[in-house]
Length: 212
Length: 212
DNA sequence: GATTACTTGTTTGCGACAAGCAAGTCGTTG
DNA sequence: CAACGACTTGCTTGTCGCAAACAAGTAATC
Image 1: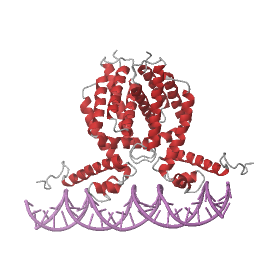
Image 2: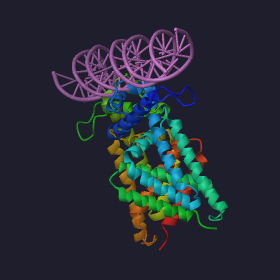
Image 3: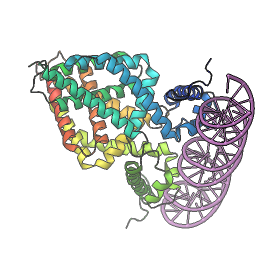
Image 4: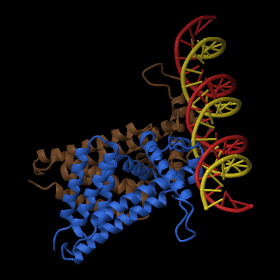
């Protein structure tokens, strides 16, 4: 089984499997090291070796430290996007915002290491000269656009007053999420307080997005 | 003039002046390099030389890169605290929050480089293993405490309904500020949008802190 | 003469990259 | 269809440049 069959259309598998596996193992290694040691103190050498390979593989595969971090951000970002689209499917307006907010909180609880690493990289990407700045900026823009669309569709569906400024509220919502995530990163132990912040955010959104 | 007078009580001046001056020049150099190149790419060597000294002075004075950044955060943090106490003196409740919000926006406009460097360091301090994490955490706690006090004093003074949860609203306010600052750092050009976010925040606070 | 501000020399460790090796892949031919 | 050989790919090892950290030195200040 698994012999070198196929000549085209389907890609060869065995080598591809190997890289997929080493990618996955290095992702886990990187997440763990980022959460434990931080971005600065994490070395490409350690990532390779913790994943069970040589000291050089991480550098070879991703080209640079920034390349590795890009990969981490993309991977976990996609993970989140899948979850988000699943949860908000078919929903609009306040309902969609509420579902997204709840999913975000759940994501923090269920995969804390992945989410922590993701946002540690996120916040670190702010300064100039960060290789994965664009990746983060793209995710951020996409998030803001999605929220705006939900609000607009809520307005069009007659469930939200046309008087609200969708763009402004979307910006405010995204900023609030960032703020909450910051609090969570700084005080990982205070989960109940974080949950209450998510609740407050939902309440505030209901205030800001009244029925017509 | 400026001879070695005084024997006690007043500190010696000439040497102290020298360090004060080199501190100040290195602070400016560090701010500039952080804003231009980012934290990672800023080197102690460049800081010393840009300040007009040798390649080694920054390392010698602050002990380590983290030590330099601690100094930067403390210096600009104190700058802000002075401004904040000046602006909110004698005010309580929504009035104090409004004044603080306005001052924060003004600070971003008037000393953008200092504030940018400050918050770039702030966000970078989140991950583990950051030497100035405690400094930032302290500022953050103090900020939250101040806000809570303003709200409590507003309640005691009969200008805010006793039904509001001062702690929760304070947390929410600080999170919102963080979120707004994030947006500003990422999109420096969109100042009008940032200003509108500050306005929205003030409006939201008025909604959340109603009169009794 | 002692302390202090600052400079210079040296070590160590990481990121980056080039060169190498072995396993895997694929076209071709008998 | 099996077996050979050319090529590709995944991974490892060797090396260089550079920055942080620190020790030892010099000259100004006290």
